[in-house]
Length: 311
Image 1 (cartoon, rainbow, N blue to C red):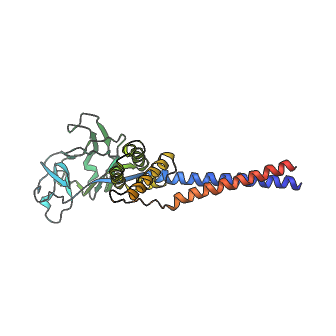
Image 2 (cartoon, rainbow, N blue to C red):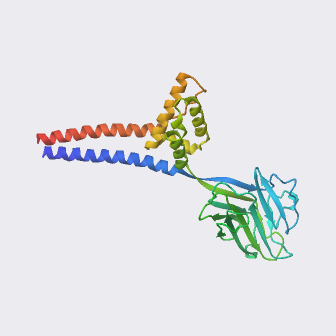
């Protein structure tokens, strides 16, 4: 009876330990997966814009150009009241005639946009026939065209989700307004979003270390290290975290190669070496869990089979 109890206890311990290790590794994987994707605002159009001294416009028929940084938008059939009376918005819809008001980026956005959100402070919803977002890879909106019908027309934030995000594309917001009164719809801000895949970004850098630039370091270690360090510095913080903590073999190999280059250049001279901060507690915890778990599992299994042999 005692022998049977010991065997059952040992078996349960083995199962519990194995499950514990599996759950620990699974949790780590889930954390990395959760952090791998993040939605970021990459473009914002707000008013008055950087071109406010040159694009003053009073009227609901005609066009002007808004500029934020290096980005430009052609805005048609919207009024900015020449930015008088503290206008920090634009308005469309005319009492003179029905109109279609549009906002489109002049140059393509190189990054793939996943959604566009528009802040609408005021709107006469029953006087707006429709709203939509057109996406295309040419300024005439004929190539790779996508049409995303707008959500319910109301005050607040209207969001247009793009089914097939495309790089180097143009984005045209369109508002079909009835003839009624001036200023049927107000737009105060437009945000363009993208999703950043940190794991992919980190893996691209790891491949550069293992099989790209890093593989040509022989006889050129200092220059190669400087190039790789510059690449590492340009990574997003999320990608750096994945590179510094992931236990996937590609990342383990890349970190080892980087550490070797840093050590070699630091010992033999060359450019100033700026080492990466790889003292990550999560990574160390995973290694410790696996090491201790493996040792414990081996000991328990050995004890189990010895008892079984004696029985």
